[in-house]
Image 1 (cartoon, rainbow, N blue to C red):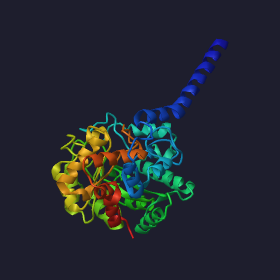
Image 2: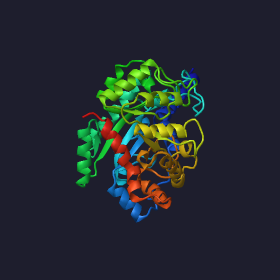
Image 3: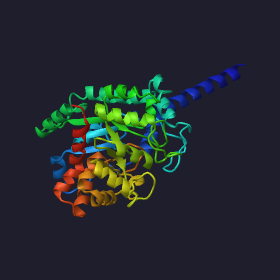
Image 4: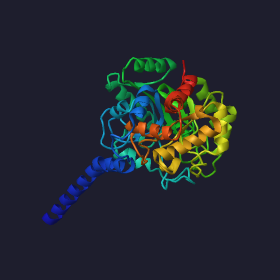
Length: 390
């Protein structure tokens, strides 16, 4: 009996150790293995660094709230946090909010009812119990984390809700204050759980960008990586209409071609594609066709070019610039922007302090300082000014 008791104690200890590892070590290990960038400082020219410091830099998509990190602390891994945003002279960072990731994730075809890999991440990172089964609650929890970070930042991080907030941020930065603005963007309407009324709840929680789909079709819109890849449903049309009416920017990233066509046929305000590539320089269903780029240009929208292999195939500054050049050549420089997808389980050539490397690549490709300034943020600023509520 004593031997059995000792065995039982030993197993209990092993189980306790295993649980500690699962809930403490494992999530951080996954984070470190998926969000990769060589550490700075980066060897950019003084000209590039000076232009970035003088520009309004806006990144349309990053995902740090997937991970159990403090946004206010400078981390030794990943690609985005407040100290590095300040050092990188980023004026506005849009934080994407993902709520579900299907098992077997790929860019071609994912079942809507596939097992959800994000649930394991939610549980092991000890998110609130309400988030374990509700996609909507996962969205609200990530919004809460941003607001908590902003409150603790002593004014260094602001959550932008209105045009007045935007104007105040720009005025402060023009006066030399290194304040960073932030926007919340939902990544996929499946988080609404079929309920249009939840758009208003998300709006009240600070969401100002609404992505149609993620890696699978949902009740409102089809995904470029879905099975049916359908267009907007009746719910989807009502969501787009309501989002525009209350002051939320529609984000076409990950949307099926049919969904993009439906949105662009009804949109009354500029849209964004927050993080993407173009098929002309990186073939694949994840990226935009020339026809789609032209339609977005006609809408007055902005294509946020990603920094990762799935968007540009060659995830170097020169590879990113090739995609940007193609968009510029098709519809003009007014429609090119930044859409890093930092911390979205991607490997990149630099973190958010390394944007001057991209600027040097643009200079080497023959872009003028005025054009580079537009790409860095003026174009995205135009869309935000046109869509944020007064």
